[in-house]
Image 1 (cartoon, helix red, strand yellow):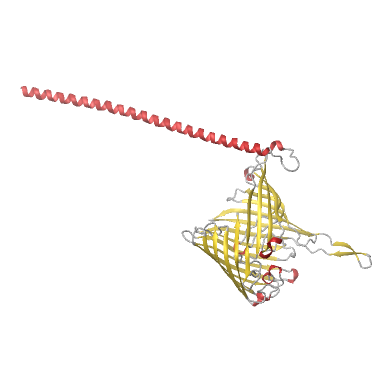
Image 2: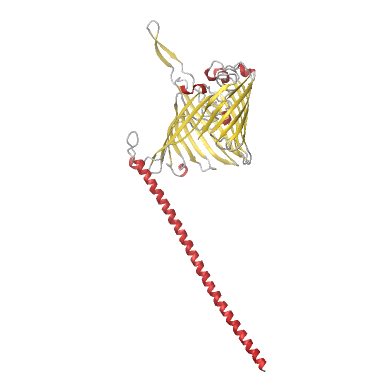
Length: 502
């Protein structure tokens, strides 16, 4: 009986102890839950405090930027503008810093047979690498002038141009290639990114780099509007009214209406469409008073040359080539004054029935995970000219420019080209092949990395028809009556050159 009582007492103690332990555990769990909740509340409070601190910092940074901009504008507006006083000066201020862009090439070249370097080519353009016989520079300067109170930004642009043979750089005169003003940020909606411009400018001039051949070129004096958002597949519309210069001062006038729709997305690439409509007319015949040998006044009338109107259409498609680079293909056709492979330029001696057809492809490739880059181009042009008794002229040119890069600076460049040209005046097909090799040092490892320094050697071979064509520029190099290669069917040159753009 005593044993049972002891066991019962032990059992009661065990049950009581278990309940006490459970109660303690519950109390501890509740306490831990409260602590966890308190910790979560503190974390949330810290997050809110951090967000408020970030917002305050951003506001402070924006205020500092506004203060700095206000200081710059105040300082700029303290400088009086040149020229007549601006009657709306209270709503405007001078802004911005002069920036520059441009291009130049310079160096020296020698003909393999001695004397000044000769350039090789037939038709309308030559392969330029190791085959340029001149020093050339165009330096552009651009400056915002006024920041109007309505948000419009007015800017001035000018560029200086100089070119001369390598042997006569010091005797060259510098001229103004561009002088124009534009205004941007003046509109809303489709006009938000558009700009207005008036003046003299190099307008819309993409090229085939290997040939330095501009398949589109609207240079001249005029004005227009650029980059109006059409809302159609990312495309922009531009229009310009251009008056080209009468190259012979014969009292002739042309006005070109140039239309452009660019960046129209299609597939992996985008289209650019150009169109031109040119009106041409001439002044009355020129009459001059002259004195003959007897002292009598004689009126001499000189007929003004005829002037043709014209039009052209152009379609370009630029697309990626895998992840190697890009390629541009184009097809173009022009009539009358616009029967010119540099579409947008005026053929000043054209007749209304003259026509030009052109098709081309030009690519720039930077091959990934490779030390190779390449440029390539092919162009075919056919002209049907009636002026000066000319007829059906055909020109074909194809070239490849592979380059191996030892590292990010030094490389070995090669250039291969073939051209054929059949002028109707002779009826004979002129052909030429050209090859160049050069050691290069460039600012980067890409097909068009510039500046680039070169030490080059060029060799060319052509047929008898090219040799016998006295009208070919190759046979009248550097203003001389004949080049050193005029009576040969092959030639070479060597030299050093630097090419740069920015």
